[in-house]
Image (cartoon, rainbow, N blue to C red; front, top):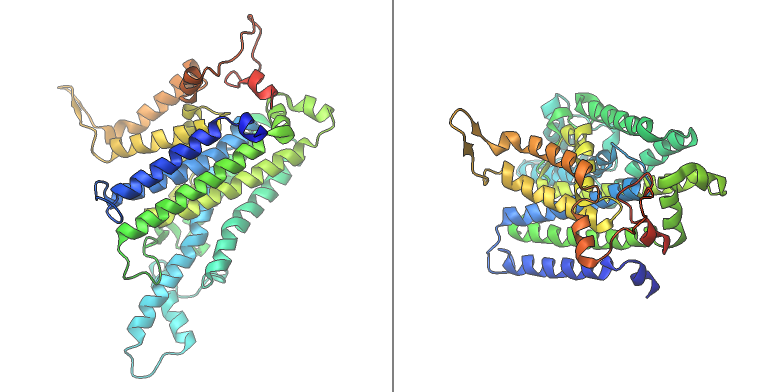
Length: 408
């Protein structure tokens, strides 16, 4: 009961998510009336995954004060890890089917060479790189979804935090890490097909007889469940003493260190945890998208992630979900050709070209005039307002509900 008292948004979020999941299922083409197309079910599933990675960004930035401009790289790594298994297993089925018609049964080495040629022929190779050594094993690749981003975050975070790099310098370092990873993946000899990336991920191995409408709703359910678990974990992390300490680090790191807390340890834990959460989101997102390439790991994607959280309202878990969902769905509407062009006579505004400009302006407007983001509107409705400080400063984070947080 005390946990729910500290997180009044939790039961509301759980109820809304359950109702939303059931409604989409009943209106889907697979299990319902067909009012929602399969492509839109995939869009909704991907939106839930983006909300998941937005929660990770809110934990590391909104609650701990670390503006990471590289968290989408962990999201992409999760997609690459599961994509390797999907592409290998799917190609193996195709190769085995074609070679079964041969007079003599193929050897295991011949099958492996044929799979390698199918996958890496696009970059002029047929040999499996070392990074694909576990691609044949589903459970090994599932483990790598967590291990690879987790180890990268652990090493990077340990080096950065022990050196006490903070503020804008830390943000630049996270962006440099993302840029280096993106440039590496663009190379054909990276072992991940360079600029071509991994494709055909929407085709589940062994599910040839299952149509995409069923597969899309299954991934939608998995994404909804992952978001629910992530929200519960995030609510638990920010509650109690641990949550108070990380918020203290956000507001005054030197004072928290003076009180005897291991600031670096707290920051490293949150950084690694959120990297793993982001990677799980990526592992669910890209099978629904069907393809992943190095552009998904580029620094601009992590900047967009920060924009989503700011628009939704950082320092509020539900704000991150609202921001990511709002921007994702509105972006789909503008860039999918549904938004009508606006003819001005001398010029026609095409939203496909101007959407990113509109998103940037929205971020600037929110930063200047509504630091609480969309989540601030929920605060108004619920009466959860910032205290009247009689002119006293709210501190370095104007959007934080300090008095409410002090009760946790």
